[in-house]
Image (cartoon, rainbow, N blue to C red; front, side):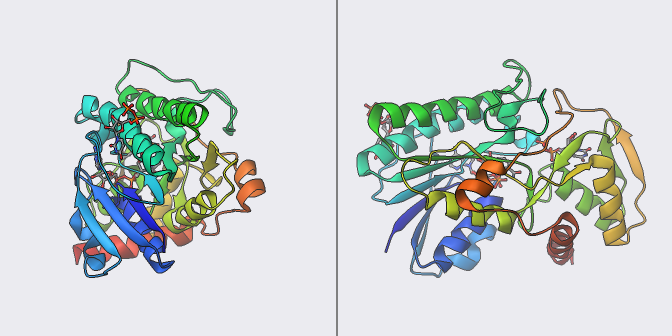
Length: 311
Ligand code: NAD
Ligand code: UDP
Ligand code: UDP
């Protein structure tokens, strides 16, 4: 039976990954410092004898014996990663060095949760993996974008220099149950506002676009990518290519929640990307993956979760 470490395992995506790995019969070590994640996300797993929670900050060394590592630890929403930007860079860079050092020592395969943010405010559309991006190195988002870019560099240098087996996924906006209700991301914000009958806050004119992937589809791709042969490294875009304006998203959520909320317009945050949509040809070709859950269906599941959370 394989032992698999999931850093950031008490977070939104990480907790769904822990669920799936346990379902597949593996032993799971969930490593998290609970900065944005919570024990509530994994409380249903604590009694499972194949599950262990380790409270630890990955910017410090960690000695474990594992076969695989999924490195997800890092705050992902702009308000959280900008709260302590130096720590965000440390988590991406020192954290990656420690987890790669661990992978090197125990000869484990290691997966990196990279991000579409490494493309910055992209000048080509949709984004393919061979696009190098258009990133501000000194702005408010840079701690996250440049941290994740440096982590990718480290992954490829550990492969070239130390023959570590790596899998790098570039994740596009993902949503679903267990998103933090106050983390400021657009899907959770709009659903919470709609359910509470509060104004729906659109930043800018709402014409900027994003492509939203439901979390179950994403987890399926993680496992498929981890199980590829050692020569498959990525980077591989993972996301749902369905592209929507933020205004369309707001209208959909108002409709699905049957809400009386009004839309209000607020200033656009710094360096907010105008367009984002993944080209997922590589994922289709290499891992035979295509997301199945469309935005409306995924939003229904997510609304149900938040509805229950508040009732
Ligand atoms: P999240 O904030 O819910 O999860 C991140 C987890 O990492 C949290 O549990 C947090 O406590 C933990 N963490 C943060 N710093 C840590 C540290 N130094 N040591 C140990 N644990 C630490 O966010 P998420 O949406 O689940 O994102 C998971 C990963 O996926 C992140 O690496 C993020 O950058 C990446 N990603 C997410 C999205 C998305 O749309 N959700 C998109 C692109 C990339
Ligand atoms: N490391 C770790 N767990 C391990 C092995 C290494 O956390 O099981 C850390 C270690 O503290 C080191 C980092 O990973 O700082 C990088 O390890 P590597 O072997 O690449 O570098 P070195 O030890 O030579 O600095
Ligand atoms: N956004 C918005 N209202 C909100 C939260 C976000 O209009 O209450 C916008 C935000 O400016 C961005 C998009 O929605 O254009 C996605 O924001 P999010 O923070 O979810 O993700 P990211 O910008 O990292 O893709």
